[in-house]
Length: 174
Image 1 (tube, rainbow, N blue to C red):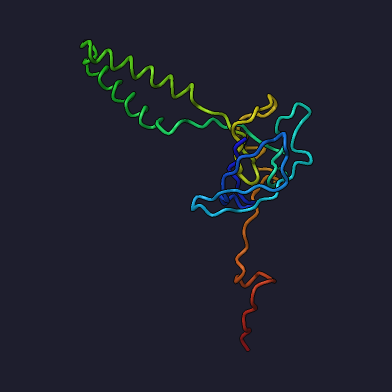
Image 2 (image 1 turned 120 degrees about the vertical axis):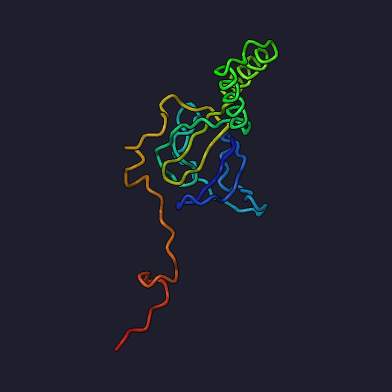
């Protein structure tokens, strides 16, 4: 299983590959800049009886949703499909070469839909899980579930903020 790990404020930490059967407590996530980060995972209630992911292993949130991710060439295929529609509307589709190109575009659009992967994403931290079997009870993103207070990200406090009790105090005016 591939995990795109994020912290509680939804900031990306890195990517890690995990074997759910091994249930490792500590993984090494590689950040975008190549720096390794050690992340502790909580497998206590994360898997259901069928061995499928039930909750987020990074933050413990019980609410996950499924998301389809398109391949990287999807925007390119969309532009080509738009060009094919324009060619058809303008009447250039009677040429056999244009018809062959339109059929190729149709095949390319079908490939985009077939190659779309399904991921599980945590409502609270935004960590994404791919390459693992997904249980049927996970649904698409729901605004009501996302609005629940338990699913809100933790806002990272600025240590120098005047309202922060841990930060430096500001001098008072006489």
